[in-house]
Every structure is written in structure tokens, then in C-alpha cells.
Image 1 (cartoon, rainbow, N blue to C red):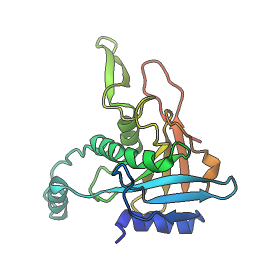
Image 2 (cartoon, rainbow, N blue to C red; image 1 turned 180 degrees about the vertical axis):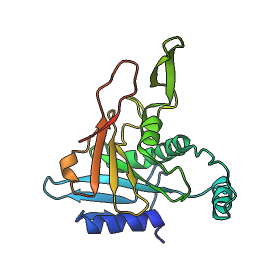
Image 3 (cartoon, helix red, strand yellow; image 1 turned 135 degrees about the horizontal axis):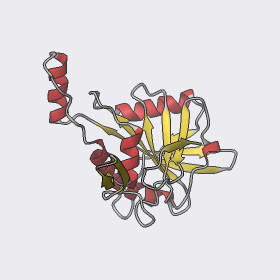
Length: 217
């Protein structure tokens, strides 16, 4: 039975004329699960391997939702999206690596099914991929500070290079944001997946003392 994220992904593909097929659930000889889908780019021809994963509410999320519904929450507790995203990247990379066979680009599609305030956003994706934002230097007198990427990065030249992009599918299932991995072994050409409901992003120019921004491609 398809999860909510899988159903929405299939509906999104149909609505945006994306040619896809669902992989047959099975394990390969290494014991790794096979990714969920493959997108076929007929003009090339080539394919993009796709793993779809969703975030479901944990006990804390459920309690916060209950309190919100009862109007009893005085502050919104932090949802550690960066840690959750890192876990999904780690889990998916083995599947993507096994199925891409060292020849195809692959992407992880994430869906926020937690349905509480502070939704998953682009900054969470950036810091999960490239590291936590940390203060590098503080000059208290001038009230100036610089930031840089710190630890807990999941995408490096030596790690998770089979993940060409980390994507988010909106809660309505109407928008797919593709965040390209600058360390990917195989890149996804944005022209392969184009449409008014698809947005592509890459890291912008690095500026001394500041984290780069996502730049739309």
C-alpha cells in the first residue's frame, strides 16, 4: 500500500507530464532495498532514480498538535528538522547507490507529514546537506559576526555522492523543490525536469564570513 508521500508523488508526476515507473519492491544481493521509482527522460534518453520518504509525527509532535488544537500551547517547540533530514539522507543513499549502478543520477524526495508549525524548509535542507551554521568570529564592540558551515554535514566529496539532489514535495503535493548536491557524482540537468511546479536550486557564491544562499537555476 502506497504511503501518502508516494501517492502525492505519483499524482505530481501525472499532473506535470513526468514519465515514471514504480520499481518492484525487492532486495538486491547486498540486502539493500530498491528505491521506489525511476523517472525516464525520453529525449536523452536517460533515467533518474528516485527514493520517496516521508516524515511522520513522533510522540512529541503529536502532543504539540493536540495542545495546539486545544489552544493550550504558549510556545512552539523546535522541530529538529536538520537531524531528521540527515537520517533520511543516510538511509536513502545506500538504496540510491545500489540502483543507480554508478551510471544514473538519483534523488531523494522528502515529504513533511508532521503537519505542525515550523515546517521543513530550505535552510533545514542546506544545513543537513552541508553542515550546521556556526558563529566563526564575534566582535562584540562592533556587533559583527561571521558564520560558516560546521559539523554534521551529510554531503561531502566523499559521502553520499550518489544523492544527486535532495528534494522537498510540498504538503499540498503541488510543488517540487530540487536542491542540487554540489558533490554529486552524477548531476541532474535542470532541463530534464522543467515546469511551473518544479524549482531547482544550487548553492550560490561563497562570501567570506557568510553562509551561501540557495540560488534558483
